[in-house]
Image 1 (cartoon, protein in one colour):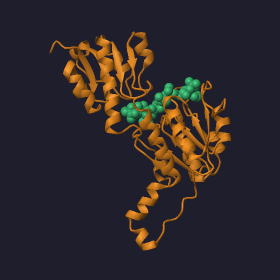
Image 2 (cartoon, helix red, strand yellow):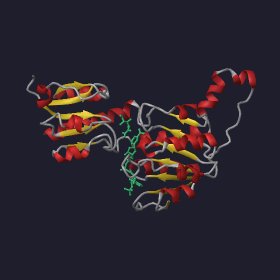
Image 3 (tube, protein in one colour):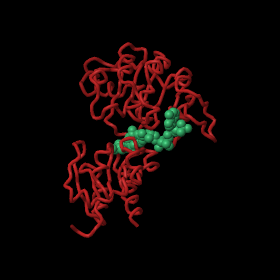
Image 4 (spheres, protein in one colour):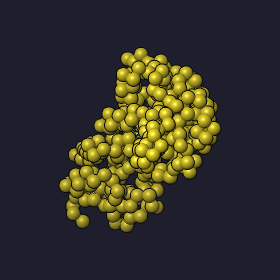
Length: 304
Ligand code: NAP
Ligand code: 8YV
């Protein structure tokens, strides 16, 4: 016991969070992804929690004096907010500081997918270029595309702005039309998918967006269609996506996020027309440090 306020942290949280929290708080480190495990004495002392991903009622109910859950990441989809709200526990997240990084990554993933960059790099590294000659062409191009954004919030708008110089048409679907933009707004996701050939998902994971990107939406993109996901994997019916990729009713997909991370279905791993990233859209040291600082600042401000 140190006399300092005790904060529970996942042992694998970004290092900057640990370093900065240690300066002011007593850290109670727990393992992520296992059933909750903490001594009753420690549980009693915990007043704050710095977490990422899942933090359910099983944890919240164990901590009688918890005041704040500071989530490392945008949104609250892993946190049982209903359980937190019942207890009057504040929940914070880390928006804005990663907008540019995630938007850059979204454009990179789109280009990687359309130009089949992982495949062409394998062609060079395997020696095929020297042995077999020029590598087979990508059937897809950015030229003439209409890009639909499912979500036009803090990150969505940054993606849209970055796409303008590519001379593509831009449209979007959100529940409320966004003020101050000229992009075409569609009232439903299906109407958007019918109007575009490229769909970028950047909505939060909520019950409303759960598996919203289904067989019908994917089919509407057409055989030249490209689907990019930098939002949440829970927004996608992955079985339908695998079927569309295999049947080539969809040309390609670029995915940074998956339904049940870190598990990636074999059907996606086997799909040559999919580019797969391990949830790294915000993963640079400067951006993760900025997210970590926001987690710590939220906790410091709360206890101040
Ligand atoms: P944001 O500013 O809250 O924007 C969310 C957008 O989604 C808004 O345009 C919102 O518009 C729309 N939306 C929400 N629910 C919707 C629904 N049911 N139907 C249609 N549109 C809906 O959030 P953000 O900061 O841009 O972040 C978006 C999400 O990206 C985060 O919640 C997180 O899940 C994900 N993310 C992923 C990474 C990564 O590493 N891959 C990094 C950061 C964030 P309306 O409210 O008008 O519908
Ligand atoms: C992180 C993210 O990878 O901020 C988010 O919402 O999805 C990513 O920036 C994640 O939060 C780290 O666990």
